[in-house]
Length: 514
Ligand code: GAP
Image (cartoon, rainbow, N blue to C red; front, side, top):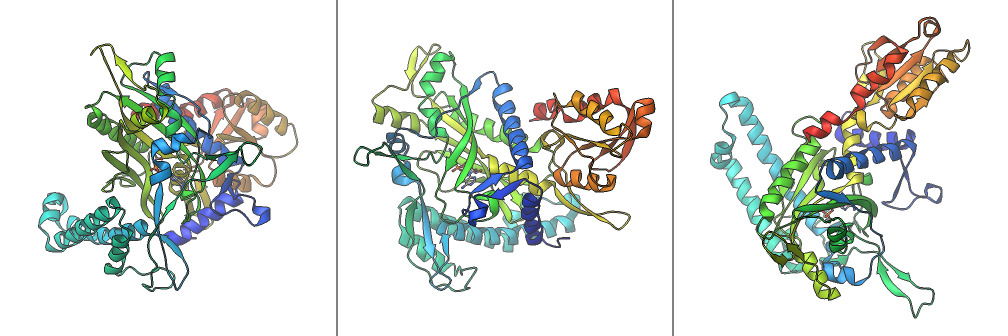
């Protein structure tokens, strides 16, 4: 059993492979770094998360529609969006370990360490003063907290100034001044900081002279922007309205670590909300609240999510924040919410020479709408669900089990149907039950090994219900239903099985709460 977060994460990664959730891409050829394949249970869980997002966004909002645009786009798209010129990461190498890092991440990690010190002081004080504790007052008056907060503000200011001016020397000096060491060599022997473009390119066309350079899209959002008028006109959409889509995105991440947290090929779930200029900050607040509620709706413990406001805004944004999740390796970005102004539509107007404006019947005038975007990585969401769900438990009888407490409506397999023995007509009875359930739920039939071993296997893939068919089932048409989280069992009539599962699997209430 794991005793710390590092071990827990390692065990989770092994579990994902052992139980068919995630495999390294092209493993038989020794794998491809930061590229992963989803196995039989992973693909189900990923689909369920995607469906939950799609239903919350598209099905539950009359004014949001979904599209599915191509991965390949006209290359000018990326000139207009700014990705060719500005989609860079600042990289720095340690000369001793030969390891490469993102300079901004080294600085952010340093800031996080100071933030942890502040959090420790605050928690200590909260414990000491109990209900009378005034956190805000403490944060602004306690000398150690104030001192550390000043340090953070000064670092952030220098970082922002350097990045805004694309002054990579200033970023290197900041790393040197903060005495940041390479986590591998422990030295401060750093190279210069260089900008590196993250887009993958490829060729379209059969003859090399004719071929034009295309880019694999680094975000799905641009497919929405270029279709803004198509959708608005054909759907007779009135502002404010949104366009959503899910799909693959590609980034040549140089520092790709932490399993599926940072991948080179990944999937995004994005929604662009088009609003009247001047109302974007209201909508930005609206979507911040709506999206954090969506995360809370999964029922994770309080304190697992937090907002992180951006100090260095992307070239297109006038406000931006991340929703961070506490992964085993710390709080990290899970979703971004960005007020993208009219940057993208205006840029596409300029580069394409086509008007991308909305005629507002109430104002009797046309304008380029402003956009508030919500953008979440499906793979990161998957990782957050798995890290939250993965539990190594010691049971009362001294044995251990690994269980995935995945929210029931997201579980890859909803019910396992298990004949107690492989004879006496029990398999046939079990198949009858599966035949009734399989139209509505992903089910699994399993007759191999002892019933205890089968329960453990289902726990390990997060199956919320195990339905056991025994000899009594043949006599009175009842089965036992075993609940994954509590391991309790009850005997119910076979014709109640479907309703029992339905009441727990439906996400009607969850989605309403989001
Ligand atoms: N359209 C805006 C946009 O793409 P972003 O913050 O660069 O914004 C949005 O990406 C989300 O996509 C992130 O919050 C993260 O969940 C996910 N994401 C970004 N890069 C990723 C990567 N290399 N691997 C996995 N997920 C990634």
